[in-house]
Structures are given as C-alpha cells and as structure tokens.
Image (tube, rainbow, N blue to C red; front, side, top):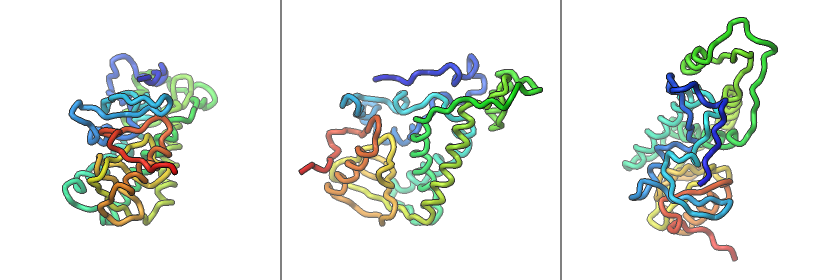
Length: 258
C-alpha cells in the first residue's frame, strides 16, 4: 500500500518536544476501529487498482501529514470529534439522536469529515507577510506557540500553509453547518449486509458508525433491509475518490446494474 510522502516543512523539530500531531486522520481513528475484524484491521479497497488489502486504523492511507495546524487538530476538531463519539456511544447502547443538540453535533461532524477530505487535496503555499518580522522566533518558539493555538510567522515572515488551510477549513465548515441548520438525523440499522465507508461522503448526508449502523440526515430512525443497504453502499462508492473500507467488503451489497 502506498504511503503518503512526508514533506520536510510539515515535520516538527527533532524529537517533537511539544507532541504536535503529525499523522492527522481525516475520518477518526476511533471510528475506523469500530470496523476492525478479528485481525485488528479493516478490509480496504483501493479504487485505482481495485486491490483489496488489510489496513490498521493508524495506516497512512487514512491520514495526512500535518496539513492543518494544532488548533484545527486539537482545538475545534477534537471538540467536534469528542462530542460526536459521545453521541455514537449512546446510540450503540440503544439511545436515539432525537435532541436538537445531538443533531447539531452530527451535522458538525459530517461537515468536518468532508471538509477535511476536500482541503487535503488542495495545494496551499506559505504566505509571506512582506518581509522578516522584527521579533525572530526560533522553531522551538513557533512550536510552543502553535501548541497553545497561537498563530505566528516563521523567522522569514511566512505564515505556514497549515495555518492558512486551517483558517479556510474552519470558514468552510461554519458555512456548511449553517446551510444544514435544522436538519434532523436518524439511525439506520440493519441485519442484512454491512455498510461501506468511503473516504468522504459527498454524495449523501450519511455518517458511518459501524458495519450495521449509520446516521442518515432527514430520516427517522429505522431498521433497513438489503435494498436500502445496497443503495447506501452504492452512494458510498460513488462518493469515494481513493478508497472504501469495511469490516468485510464481500458482505457489503451494491445495487446491481441493469
């Protein structure tokens, strides 16, 4: 499996003393873990060559290399993920996301996931502010400030691309969440087949939970059969750009073409 190239400018200083997150998951590691089989990994289909491979949740295929800053990863991003995982745990214990606050949490997560994926593909260069700053910050100073979620230029006067990307991601997320304001989410569960997970879900407002459960915007919670599972999986495949994964792809039905 091809791993992501590591760009030198995205790496922290040797030893990573401030424990900045380098491998950033687009879809949360905790969510991927719910699809793991007995081997501890998932079944992934790489669309470019149609190869099925095993992959553990920490595999680089699920990650980017420090494309956004620590504020996006451990600030608003972590808050959205933590709230989402709390809703998921309640749902898996038999609860339903019927409250307005739960719906907002799910909308926030859906938008975060898809916007992370979108901006992971967009090239952004560092931006020079027009000369070197009067205060020359060392790499250690810069990383210390980033850990505290404070924006600062490099010693050459550049704003790093990961900070620019985070700013644009946050603006996009806020706009997308506003557009989806008031949308309710239902729980789809099935005992007929299993759900695929795409690298993004732009073709439908679906959030993958585990092989038998997903969230669907605009629907009431319900048990669904093979035909509906096939339809959702076909939408997942249509959304995906690089891969889809599942606990067992052979158990994920698709709509048949006439």
